[in-house]
Length: 56
Ligand SMILES: [Zn+2]
Image (cartoon, rainbow, N blue to C red; front, side, top):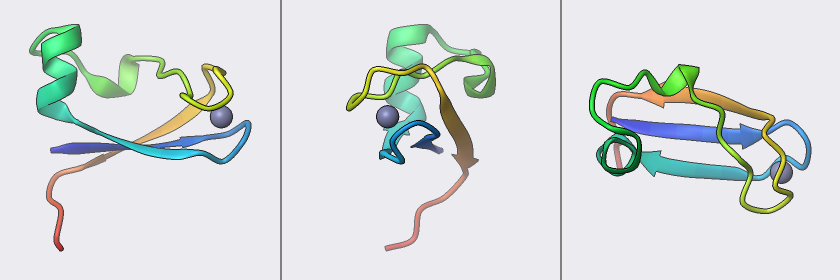
Protein backbone atom coordinates (compact mmCIF):
# COMPACT_ATOMS: atom_id res chain seq x y z
CA UNK A 1 0.00 0.00 0.00
CA UNK A 2 1.29 3.43 -0.94
CA UNK A 3 0.06 6.85 0.08
CA UNK A 4 0.02 9.62 -2.47
CA UNK A 5 0.10 13.15 -1.17
CA UNK A 6 -0.61 16.35 -3.00
CA UNK A 7 0.00 19.65 -1.28
CA UNK A 8 -2.93 22.03 -1.64
CA UNK A 9 -0.64 24.98 -1.06
CA UNK A 10 2.17 24.49 -3.60
CA UNK A 11 1.07 21.39 -5.54
CA UNK A 12 4.04 19.33 -4.45
CA UNK A 13 3.46 15.60 -4.83
CA UNK A 14 4.98 12.83 -2.81
CA UNK A 15 4.65 9.18 -1.96
CA UNK A 16 5.05 7.30 1.27
CA UNK A 17 5.03 3.56 1.59
CA UNK A 18 2.60 2.37 4.22
CA UNK A 19 5.38 0.19 5.61
CA UNK A 20 7.53 3.26 6.22
CA UNK A 21 4.60 5.10 7.72
CA UNK A 22 3.92 2.24 10.09
CA UNK A 23 7.53 2.40 11.22
CA UNK A 24 7.22 6.03 12.24
CA UNK A 25 3.58 6.26 13.32
CA UNK A 26 2.86 2.71 14.42
CA UNK A 27 0.91 -0.11 12.87
CA UNK A 28 -2.84 0.19 12.74
CA UNK A 29 -2.76 3.94 12.12
CA UNK A 30 -5.26 5.14 9.57
CA UNK A 31 -3.17 7.28 7.19
CA UNK A 32 -6.19 9.37 6.28
CA UNK A 33 -6.42 10.67 9.82
CA UNK A 34 -2.82 11.86 9.87
CA UNK A 35 -1.86 15.34 8.84
CA UNK A 36 1.12 15.21 6.53
CA UNK A 37 3.50 18.09 6.23
CA UNK A 38 4.65 19.18 2.81
CA UNK A 39 8.39 18.72 2.47
CA UNK A 40 8.68 21.75 0.20
CA UNK A 41 6.58 24.49 1.81
CA UNK A 42 6.11 22.96 5.28
CA UNK A 43 2.33 23.41 5.23
CA UNK A 44 0.07 20.81 6.81
CA UNK A 45 -2.40 21.02 3.98
CA UNK A 46 -2.08 17.85 1.96
CA UNK A 47 -4.58 15.70 0.11
CA UNK A 48 -3.90 12.05 0.88
CA UNK A 49 -4.91 9.21 -1.38
CA UNK A 50 -4.42 5.58 -0.49
CA UNK A 51 -3.25 3.39 -3.35
CA UNK A 52 -3.40 -0.34 -2.80
CA UNK A 53 -1.11 -1.39 -5.64
CA UNK A 54 1.47 0.21 -7.88
CA UNK A 55 1.93 -0.89 -11.46
CA UNK A 56 5.12 -0.04 -13.24
ZN1 LIG B 1 3.58 22.42 -0.32
